[in-house]
Length: 223
Image (tube, rainbow, N blue to C red; front, side):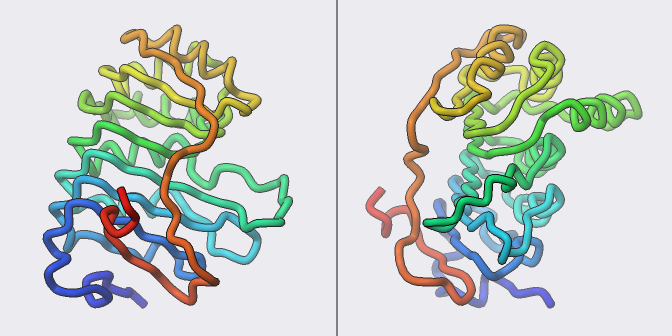
């Protein structure tokens, strides 16, 4: 079943330039945001826990394929308070980043936790060698949150081809992968600045348990 977001908010919201979407029960693969082609900023928050439908790389294809003006994309996967599921890791992989690049050519800032470790690096290289070449020179800032990182030099080569104009790489200050991302920044051909940060500064839609989906503008969140 496909649920159209357009039916859930007033008609005038078709002209929204910023949107924050939160859900915990509704699978992201059924969300199509193409009616909001004018969006510049998209924030998606979701719980990452055993009781929720996992996100997949291809979900970004569905959600961003019709957003040609998108400049900032934030995907925040939170654990519910009190949950200590240490097995929970990134639901996205390096391919999700590639999918995002293909769907949104004007992106400038990406905030997303993803898995770019060994196997996914090799998979990306294999696809590129077969002719699947993706390059986005508009992205300036990549926030990797708590993303893992292995083989920093090879990952830097991949990101140099994928995001050649990158100027800033940001990672969580308390992440065990900070030093690896510093190495990635140092080896990237554009020599982006590396920054660490505490907390993401991304607004959350406060309330009780969501029974489906909540939509609001950034302005209504006080931004």
